[in-house]
Image (cartoon, rainbow, N blue to C red; front, top):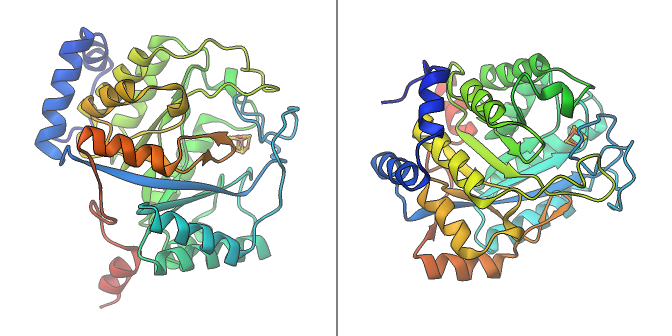
Length: 331
Ligand code: SF4
């Protein structure tokens, strides 16, 4: 049963279950709701990199930190579409475009992003964007262009948020998510572990996600990638069992959502990733870059899929294309 009325005590009880029992419980629920042999392969491209006015302590793209990322203005539409085509040929069915903006502005750059969305949608891929905060009318324009999903992570618990980001609030985040939902775009929202949060913070973040009026269709679980020059560069590496515990708890709380094993895979062995799939992860990001951080390449992932007997999920498996929805509404 899909529930949005989880209590903190219930989540605590799940989260603290001994790890092997927790994996078993999550795997059982995963089998009930999803085809466990299928994993969605997504590609994430940074279409505008660096120079961001925000202060997210984990992010090399914040202008105030001195990192060695290659800053670039918004890419040309043709370049982005060529990259999307390459990702599609390599087996990706979802293409996500990220721009290091605090919020969308109504200008030529936004018009160009709308063209990119239209172009990727026309290729038959699920198209997702992560562009910062937006207004109702911008969300509607994105939906009209065929945007399938919008990524906007909560990152951590409401209580710990201010320790990680001071340039916006948790409420700002939730308001953006509401606008995305209202425009009929599916929601991609998760968090990062390894920021220095406690187990209690992790539970509170999961509580926020699992008690939203509708669960996010996609829940990325990221392990912090420690980047030289950011305030969190010296944080300790996250243990694999912490990732598995988060994924398994998310799977039990939000059985139908795509739970994405996101950043941090380059530091995980195939066996460690296998535990994550067993615990309910059913999506990965493929391609050698995840925005600006390293990620396993397509070939490595294909070899892992073949070893583990996994297949790539086709697009729009869990929903319909924006154009179909719009069409239906207008009839
Ligand atoms: S995570 Fe996004 S909003 Fe935060 S600094 Fe990086 S690019 Fe900017």
